[in-house]
Each structure stands twice: as C-alpha cells, then as structure tokens.
Length: 365
Image (tube, rainbow, N blue to C red; front, side):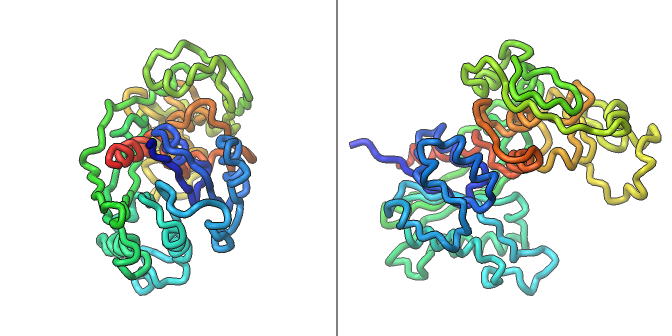
C-alpha cells in the first residue's frame, strides 16, 4: 500500500518549505502563518488547501480541529525572539519570549508526526557556543518529557543552499527528527546529494531586460532557457511574471554605475559617490553589492534595503529575479504590496534546499 506523505507547515511564511515538499512528492494539508500577505501568498500557490491555510496567531490554533493526527511530517521555522547574543541571562528556552518555539513543540505533542523538520537562521547554531541549539534539539527529541510516550531520534546540521542547486550562498540550520515509536531513524545530513554549483548568470540570463523602476506584470523572456536551472524554473512557461523593480533615485543609479561585478559600496566611495554617508565604519560588505555572473549570489535577505545590484544592468533586482535566486519557480506568485513581496522572498527557505532534505527523508521511510 502506497504511503500517504502528508505535511503540516507552521510559521510557513510564503511557503518555501512547502514548495520544496511538493517537489519531493509530499502534500501539505495545513499551514499556519500570522502575516496577512504571506498567508495570501501561501493560499495563492496552494489552492488545493487554501481553505486550510490559517492566517492566525498560532496560540489560538488547535491543530486537531483542522487535520488528522500522525501526519507524515511537520515542518517550520519558529523565530526564537527571546534569545539574544547580548543577553546571556535570558538565553534559554524558559524565556517567555520564546513562546513561538513552545508552540512548535505543542504541535508535535498534539499531532505526533512521523517526522519533523525544524529550520532557522545560520547563527542559531553558534548562539552561546552552540548550547542553545543543543537545548532546542534536546527539547524536540523528547517533547512530552516522557521518552516512553513520544520521543524522536534527532540530528542537526548547517547547510549551504548553493550545494543543492540554488544559485545563492545561503546557510540555514536544520534539525530533523524521526519518531522512535516508528523506528527512530537517524537522519544523516552527510548523505544528502550535493549538486553542481549554479551561477547568477545561469539563473538570470533568460529573464526580461528591465529598467529602473519598471513594474511589468508580465513580459516575454529575453532569451531561450539556455541553462538547466532556467528550464527547471520556467516549467514550460512563455512569459515571466512579477517583473517588479524598485525605483531608485538618480544619485543611487550613479553609484550603481561605479560598481563592478563582485564589488560593493567601497567602489562608489573611492569615486566620491558616497559623500552622503556620515560614516562607513560599520557599513556591511553586502551593501551596494553587484552580483557576479559566474558565482552564486550572496544571501538574498532584504535585497532592496541592502541595494543588491543586477549583474549587467544599472538597477536593483526585480522580484522575479530575487525569486529565481531563491529557487522559486516562475509560476509562483507573491501577494501583497511590493515591499512585503520582497520581504517574503528574503525570508523564505529556498525550495530546492528543502526538496533535497525531503527527498532523503522519503528515501529513508
């Protein structure tokens, strides 16, 4: 009898993990996301379960009112707001501001999934010299404080998306657990299949040529999909959607022109084009960074605020280009105001990275 690979996605954001799950053959049946626009995006791209995408405070959700017990997998990335590198006195799971993590544990307790996947930012692993990540993993391995009732065999790792076919250097921290009552399989991150590195040029070369501030809802591709990555992202489509570029002021464009591939704000400073900056002492190296066509992108976070520059054109990245660099397929549509769409892209787990993990989980089952 074929196994039913169902998933519950909590703290879902726009749904990067769920897209990766679907690519691997797993079917989300429920999602919870507090942000209005991210939830609208999730519904738009998962119409088959739009009725079960809950735009709610997760503390108000009893999962068993919306889905069955024992799904194949539960996944999500709860922010641990109560943890701060600067505040060692409250750097623990007892901090009341870590309630979101506690809600993640509650969903495991209530649903008792066969597998779970916990994800978070790369820095999560190094907080407190790793003690906080260890504490979280221990809590997830024994969510009821009673290993005889419900417990999980866990493992954790820091992964770089560029190793899994994503044209972006982006690290995320993962914990995977398998229910001991179902066999207690230990997930081996070292056995994940690494992919050939994909460059920015391979990812973006076929997308429409755009100008500063242009907001094209739909446009023909500028070229045939010459790379395997572009073919994968296009999924047979003939036009690219949501080609939205934030309008930058003329003096910003002049700065862009002074910066070559792989260079950042320092190139503009040397040409006297950053005179409006009172101090550059603490300016991050990723500010005014022009992407290099022969390498994966730097991390796509708040790419508008950091002023990431297109590799060939004197403008910022379009929404579709940023989504491509995150490995969202071209038929994925973002909802809400433009700035919220940009943030959804920046916050997401790259679907191809998620797909690699989910495929290995299925292979172990």
